[in-house]
Each structure stands twice: as C-alpha cells, then as structure tokens.
Length: 113
Length: 114
Image (tube, rainbow over all chains, first blue to last red; front, side):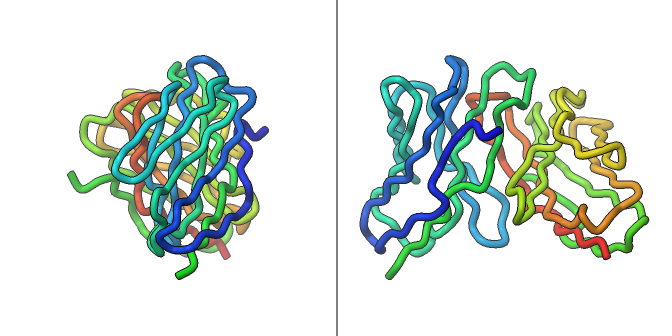
C-alpha cells in the first residue's frame, strides 16, 4: 500500500542538476514530505523535508506542488557522491499510526562522470 | 553525540536460535524506530516507540518478533526462533518528535540466518 510513487531509477551527469520526482496523491493535510537517501552499505540519511512551501538546505531543494500531490527533490549540481537510492516518504504529524512512513524501494540515482 | 548506535554490526546464526539486536538512540530523542530492509521488500517499518512506550507494532511480521525499550537510552529487537527468511539488514532510527523532524538512522545490523 504505497503512499508515494517514485521512478525505479534515474541517471544524471556529474555537475548537472537532477530533479527526482515523487507522487503522493493521497497526502493529508498533516503529512510532511520527507526525503532520505541511502548510500551503499549505509543507513538512510536525512536530506530535506517540507509541509507546503518550497525548502532549501545545504544538500538540496524541495519543490512542493501547490496541491501537494507531488514534489521534486532538486540536487543543484550532482556529484559522484550523490549516487544513492533516494526515498520520498510521507510522515504525519500525529504520532499515532505508521500508516505512512512507507519507504518502499525509492529511486536509484546513478551519476556519470 | 555519537549518533544512533547499533550492535552487533553483523550476526550469523543458525535457524531456531534466538537473536537479539540492540540500539542506543541519540540522547534526548523521544522517538525510536525499528526497520527491516531486504531486496524483495525494501525498507519496512516494524515498530516505533514514543517515550519508551510502543505506539504501533503493526509492522512486526509475526509473534517470533518482539521489541522492548526499558529506558530512554536502550532498545532491543528479539527474534525467537529465528528463520532463514529473517535474514535482512535491521536499522534503528531516532527522532526528536514525529512528522516535522528528521529521523537519524544507525548503521544497521546485517543478520544472516542459516
């Protein structure tokens, strides 16, 4: 029962921007959109999160659609170290159910030199 | 802070044996999560705690799995008896609160049941 839908894989060239899409048509008003990434043989690592407005941090930007049914993680200049599996998840601010928090299989990003 | 600490990092055991995985969350974090990752199913949430109390264990696969959090700095995930299909990487994560706060993951425990 996937709450988000992501492409299985994407490719990018080094130093070019990357846009990773995520669809979450059943999002509720209290759900935050979180992005994590997982490098090979490591635990997932937090990237960014947002609720309604676009967000920027040192790692990436998060663009959220006006209806909140989709979002895009933007890596402004991909490096070889950005090659990882990227997960988009919904994370409700109600603390009572794990009905969201479904990581699934994410998008495997490959970066070519 | 040293981050989320998990032990052991690798565990190899025979079918039928009891396995105990351990986790120390980041100090001050009120939420602790246990996940399992396999190639087939990806990363799945098993159970999470708030202030040492289990809140939702609907992801625990069956009665062979149990989790406890006796205090704010320690949690265990136990499998008894273990089966080959339990082979996976088990991650522990912690966060300050729910929803608007990031989760910090540990390095994981790779479990192999032969």
